[in-house]
Structures are given as C-alpha cells and as structure tokens.
Length: 91
Image (cartoon, rainbow, N blue to C red; front, side, top):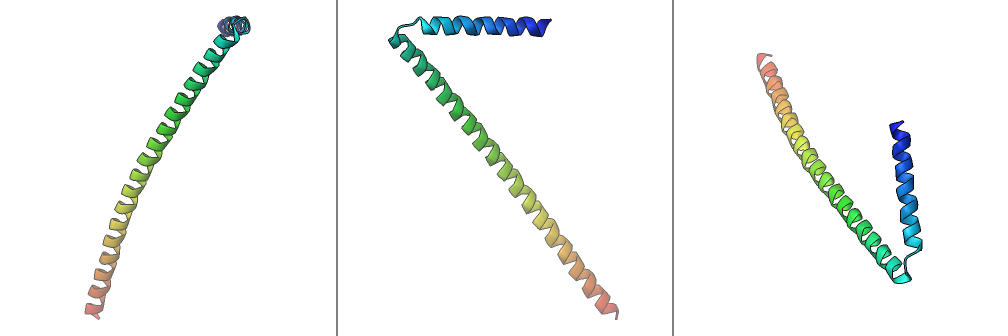
C-alpha cells in the first residue's frame, strides 16, 4: 500500500513538472536545461572524484600488502638459507 501511494505521488509530481516545463517560455526551458546540465556535470565530477579516491586508497593498500608480503618472503628465504647452512654443518 505504501509503495503504491509513493509511486502514485512520484508519478503525479513528474506529470506536474512535465506540464509546467511544457508551458514555459523557450528562454525558461533553456534555463532549466542549463541548470539540469550543470547539476549533471557536477554529479559526474563528484563521481569521478570518488572513483579516483577509491582507486588511490586501493593502490595504497595494495602497495602496503605487497611490501609486507615481500618482507615476509625475504625473511622466510633467509630462514631457509640458515636452516640449509645448519644442516650442512652437521654433515
């Protein structure tokens, strides 16, 4: 029931907005188009900024993980070499 009422209200608002737009002068329609395009451009820029920030944070985290992995790998390799040296000294 609530969804239906909400959809009907949204449809009514949309119809009213369309009617008002069609009854505007061409200058007013151009102004509305300009405002809409400006809002669209700002929204797109904000989305691109968020995407860039997310990619930056991801790359930072990826770099940190790779660095830690390489450090651990190096420590393990050194440990293996130490074990090899110790086993050879027993022979």
